[in-house]
Length: 105
Image 1: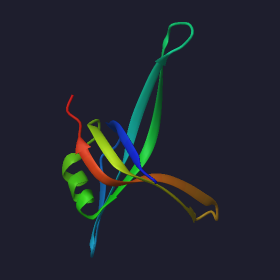
Image 2: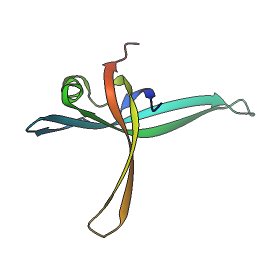
Image 3: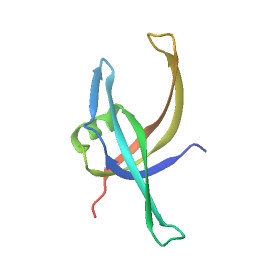
C-alpha cells in the first residue's frame, strides 16, 4: 500500500493553477526530526517534500495553506520524470495529497 502521512511547516506560499476541469495546488513542506547524539547534543534533521493536490483538495489548500503554517498531509508517493529544455532527464518525487488539514498546537 502506498500511503504517506506528514506533519510539518509549509515552506512556500501555495501555487494554484486553474484548469477547465478543476484546480491543482502545489507547495513545499518541511518535516523535522530530532535526536540526542552520543555527546548528549540535540541534532535536528529537516527534510523537504513537494506536495501536490487536485480538485477539491486543491481548493482546500488554496484557503488553508500559507507559508509557515503547521499542517498535516495524507496522500501517496508519486515518482515521475521529464526531459527539460537542455535535454536532461529531471526526476521528481512528490506527495499527491488526499487530505490536508491544519494542526493546532
